[in-house]
Length: 104
Image (cartoon, rainbow, N blue to C red; front, side):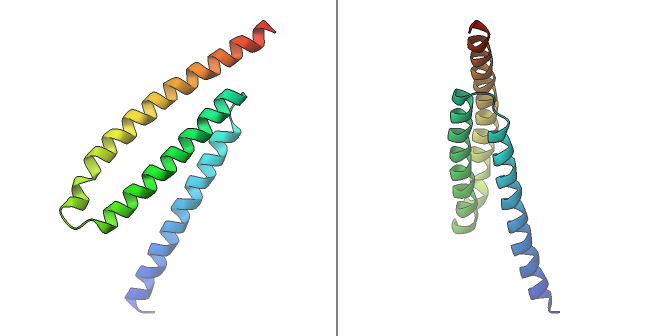
């Protein structure tokens, strides 16, 4: 088998495996929610993350060097800060929903 073919198989297989892992993780995140407000929030954040990550990947391949390298810094900062903020908000929603269930 030619090296180019092996590389193509690896690239396509790695991409497919990465997307399937993302789909599985998204599905589990939505499945593990405890209430309707939390589920709606997780779905909204999942859509946001899928859009931004897809846009990032496209920009890395479309932008010419060195601009495709410069996109990593804002992406990394956005990703880490958004994950942290969304985790805190999800926890607050979970606690609020839990407290409202206890009152019933």
